[in-house]
Amino acid sequence: MEHRVTFNIAPVPASRARVTRWSTYYPARYSKFRVDLGQLIADLRPTPEEGLLYVKLNFYVQIPKSWPKKRKAEKEASYCDNNADIDNYIKAVLDSCEGHYYHNDKQIVMIRAVKRYSNNARIEFESLPIEDMFFRKNYCL
Image (cartoon, rainbow, N blue to C red; front, side):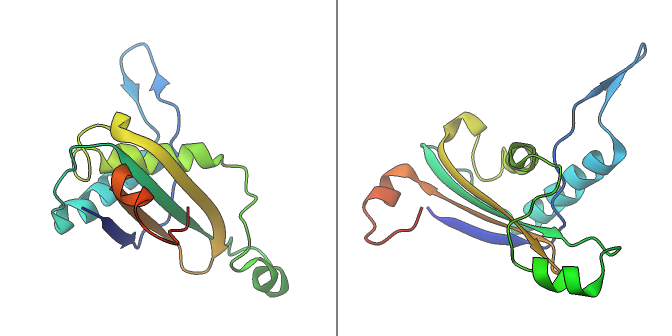
């Protein structure tokens, strides 16, 4: 079954766990993102897939408010060149979707992700069984 959804939440890259003498924790920004995205997913009540999956992710990163209007206009919808790696954005979303859209992220065998600037920060998520992808004509990877 195909899942296509837009999460109206600003994407946050996954960060490394912090280890202290007493505990291990994630930074507050990443923890809050995981909770908020988890709540958005839970509200949709998706059914987890059983087989292998193909996932498409479009990340629309908020344009910094400190930039001048001219630069904001130039960067709208262009590829995002901020310091965060795209694989960290992917990890944050896939970890949050685990148990909702699929049982384990090892089911994902193919992925396509794009990171762009936008004034409307959001995440577009699409997943479909790998078998279905190859039988569609003109399906864009």
